[in-house]
Length: 243
Image: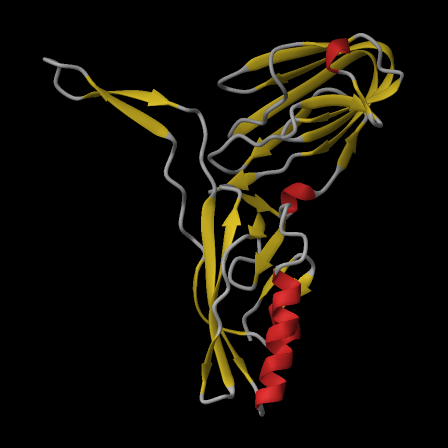
């Protein structure tokens, strides 16, 4: 039986069966078009982002009695409406190599057919990217250089933990980019979350102790990471992603 798992709970554990799904759609890139009088075609202005996308499952709940159906509906509502103000992990049996970050923030209409089958559609609002489960594995590297290959067509925004003391330098080079970050006070370690766009140590922000352009990205294809100075090792979660 096919299923989806949201916020740590599987649909099959609640007796939900899937009749159809819309899970492979991709969002429209955020662009604006400006027409110029006397000029053929429009100018394109990029907002540099993908908006959220929608994932939906059309489901039904079989039941042997009206009471059983009512109890199942109550449990499903409690599941989907828990913590509606944040993203949760969404995965399913159709796309096992990836997961999404999703939130259920829609009206839930459940129709009662012959008093024994509840039919409904679950619509999730999702981060535009699908994240590779394999790309969530943390690996520690104690020698430089490091070579990582991004297997997908989109740059990933990794998590890095830069271990060491004093000052150090981290460089990431790819076919399209060569960027360096200089750390002035490692104090044991400095963490970097490129999705959150922060350098930090425990709960203390350290953006003011790091000099460099933007935050680390892993471009599609080969990426070479080098470190020097007081940096002794680097822990990396690459967070490979695709649409």
